[in-house]
Length: 157
Image (tube, rainbow, N blue to C red):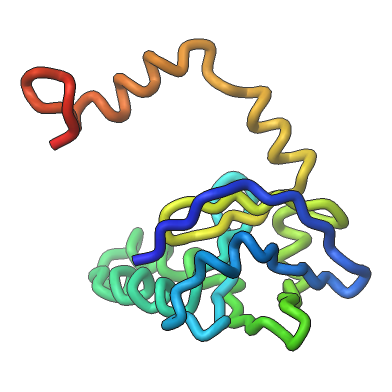
């Protein structure tokens, strides 16, 4: 599994192409073969998965019981707009206009890389998220991560 890390400011060209930063390219697993899937994310961002990571996530989604209406709705929305992309000879990805419109991305974007994905954000939207940081990040950390602590409260399980 990939373990991306970093924030990268990028610009889209007039055709919607994005130069993948060398710092991210160096983190790519050779198994991805410079192939990706771009999909809608939460909070109006896009999510770029290396192709090999997408296959694992897609496999999990495909295990959902399709006889359950909420599952079908989720599956449809999850796959809606998913597009396979490949780096061109100059290290650029052509992002589909429909997905760029969804994210409100026009010229400047931020790539936020973590775990096995790279979120693609319109720069202004991303900066707005950062200003909405919770008043007490420590309380949020305790609420979200506290359940992962052992009885001493010092180590992750």
